[in-house]
Length: 193
Image 1 (tube, rainbow, N blue to C red):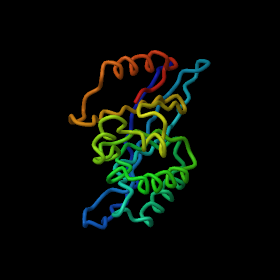
Image 2: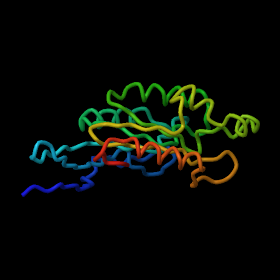
Image 3: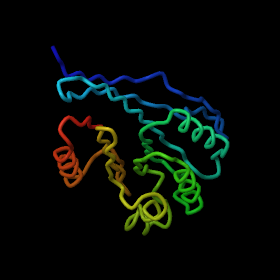
Image 4: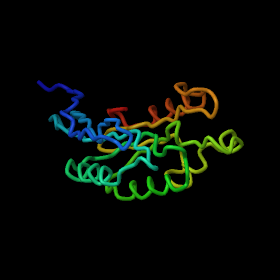
């Protein structure tokens, strides 16, 4: 008998615990394994997707380039299907910090999905934070603040829930409608993250 099998497995992280310049300890990298099985021609094929998720890279004065190189080496060694990076890319959304982040992203040789964090909108000038909070992010990192990536039957949806004044953590009506539309248009059987 044939069965359709789906299992999500978190593997042992290929993590490096690094001490940052400010004395804080951070996990430099980790990965998530998703195992999915698709029923094709009356046989079951196991398709393993490896996704790496990075967060809070905070390029800027406290960023240590040698740690960035270690992360890039880990990415190459794990040979993932995709890398997902959620903000914060910067400390204070300065152009020089975004340039560092852009250079790092250009070194990743697999598909990426990126979304900004609260530090990726400038504090000053206030008018920029209120009118165009992600203009620098969109110039240096990605033109969209909400995006999707489809790789090996896995649909990853990245959503920016940061707001210029109010705390983040909520999605607008248009974002919820967009998520529903993306999920509806995904291939049958796609794993949605």
